[in-house]
Length: 403
Image (cartoon, rainbow, N blue to C red):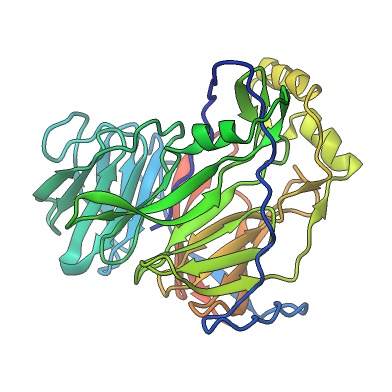
């Protein structure tokens, strides 16, 4: 139940446009009762160990399954693993030992067919599987045998301007990071400047099934962009909104620039907040060099890396960079937080994740291999995507062993 991020699209704005950074006053950390919440302790929390329990994907053990692009992944209450392949446009279901049980779907627009490379998936009550296809803006519900129970077409937000980010909670509510107002909010802060960095405003919305409309939960700053002459592109060490659905309803959200997370209810009220002990990360000379050499694009063609490196030479460098990389909503209502590396672009064999409870308390630290992107996490398991140096994707399931 975690959104799979797709990155920013290039947006063109007409006229002599310029943007000023959208400034926000730093929020005070508060608890559910409105009182100031204590800062996170500076000592290390207990460490949870992760033991690899299952790998699904070609060239791994006796597996004969091969994935083109894993765009959706969820673990059912029956311990079955559901995988959506964005290239094949189908869902494969595996048992806990990796046995292929069934496949459903194909490319198309009919019942039980898919068109998108971005989906949201959720295994809900009654062993039903919900899949929202961003290519069709349509939700399909399957029963435990793979039979289509129904489809619902949802209206896409107008002028979205961004690849969609979507997530489900445990009862099948659908959430969306809505960029519909991004361009207008960015223009309003342009002033007369001709170039610079800026952030617009976006919203986290939830689909109201009864009313048939998207309802806004909270407004947050957009991803930070660099603009010049009306064209937008990725900014160096850009801050971005981080969010994930809470199983019981509502969302966790924050900003990668600060170690501050908030939990918001379905009514948009702040339930609790957590402020971590880690402060701002200063952009060092090593960071600047790694960014301008495009070390983050290792594996891409030399020609492409040289082109990107040349473009980056012209971009201004900020003094600080984000503290957080990502968050993942946990099945118990808590949240896992991936910390940014001490040096940007550095190789990491393992990545540190902080684990918060549903009450916003730091309870543990877990370390995952650097090439694993967790999609669903819980107090007893981590389900994710492992990418090989050649770009091949596997499904990997870890058992969590608490210390």
